[in-house]
Amino acid sequence: MTGGLAALLLAANVPLTVVSGQLGAGTVAVVIGIPCAAVGFLVARRLPANPLGWLFLAAAVCLFVSNAGADYAYLVYRLGHRLPFGPIGLVLDQLWTAGLVLFVVVILLFPDGRLSSGFWRWALRAYCALYIALVAAIAVATAGALAAHPVRIDAAGGLSAIDNPVGWFAAVQHSIWVLLLAMSAGFIARQLLTWRRSSGERRQQLKWLASGAAVSIASLILGIAFATTGPSGWTTSSGSASPRCRCRWAWPS
Image (cartoon, rainbow, N blue to C red; front, side, top):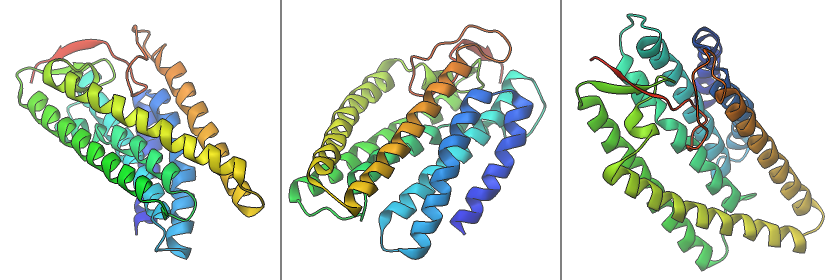
């Protein structure tokens, strides 16, 4: 069912991305999301006790839902189409961060989904706590931005309060991101040390992990390259976590 949902979301993403002209973020969602959905479907079906399959599927669904919501919000708020449920598109857009952060958990748990060391199990719990705190902060900030009058929308059709955070949300978000990045570096270092000590099948598995990470990074760079020019020629910036345009403007709600 989750694999079917991912396929339906992918089918919805393609026309929305083409109509809205948001090729940068759409490219990232497709290039990362399709392999994630395929690998997640195979692993979850053959090894349902392995959490990696479900994590891959969840990441793919988050990316597809987020991109579809962002493109829909762009059509409503940037291009002025009188379509219903525009605020829902803005809410779904925020799943972009939630999907990308899940990849770090995949790196830690790769390949069998188990951690033999108590230290790394506690590290995973701490990472999950930070992840929940980040999602909660984004949810509160999103609710506040939607309740504001007027609702401020940037040039990509996203909420300016999320894409250009200020005040308490900026402090909380930046603090959590610093901790998450530090822990992510530790998870990657763990796999690098494992690769040096491994051989045979385990080393081949780690090569697949490194290849997937390289594709993901390349697609992110490609998405940022698209977003820095923008389909309509407005000035953009790639300094935020999401490769989307960041020009701020107000939409009268």
